[in-house]
Image (cartoon, rainbow, N blue to C red):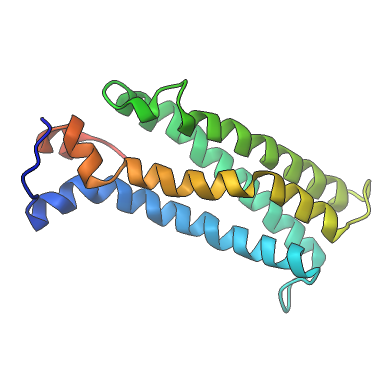
Length: 167
């Protein structure tokens, strides 16, 4: 299946559709992260956003990324892993999920405790939590899209197989 011949624009679009779809999901998570991180780094909520709304955005980010990763790990990665080493359980993408989820669990717990009044909100706490898993998250968002790119997929799958893949 591997070939070095240039892909036609149509074939490139066929092979690259999974990367483009994943990029759209990841762009949403990046946008949310940037709101959370900017506020934590400046100790200032976005204009017009209450603390409750900020904490709810923390929870929305955690839940959304958790669901996204569960879908990947149960539906997308297993089929890709049959031929692509990057998607196998012992590889970096899965290990990155584990590290990211540790951070998500911490962020979710902190936001919940603040919303319930069990913990007083501190910007430095949110910043510390985000700093613990941010670099891994950003690296992961980039690497996953790269692994789903046209040039990678064409090494392992035929065009017909790509067209049958669900994502």
